Length: 152
Image 1 (tube, helix red, strand yellow):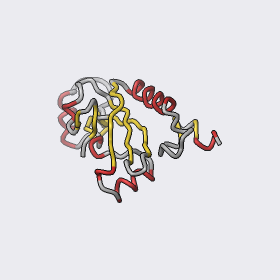
Image 2: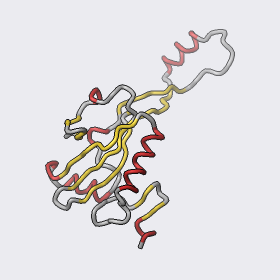
Image 3: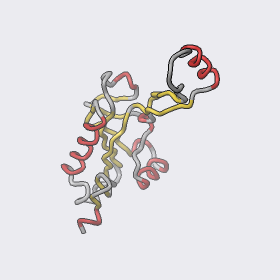
């Protein structure tokens, strides 16, 4: 399973530049030629509760320092971008029931910030008129503000 970007198969995070935050993608179901446009981040950042041993070490290191001890730490992990199939239920079902060869997963734009990622996803969604051509796209809304049904 891989993504295609600039005619290159991408299946390892090291193939992205170091400052890449995420990418805008298109997944196409070849038999119907219907596509889905979305965005995906490469890393998840979450707060993880510190364990007893970590808290003890931290107490020792901060002895005599005023202020409360932190109870959580930020943990950054690679996202599930390699196996991601978007958030559209119909597309996800198709991906589970049909062979991988029936799909094309391509990266349209690589972005180095959260803001740019949202900007370019929105740009592609409007530019490709996904809401105006519901027979060609699985997408049924843009930013949770504009819906296919609004255009009927």
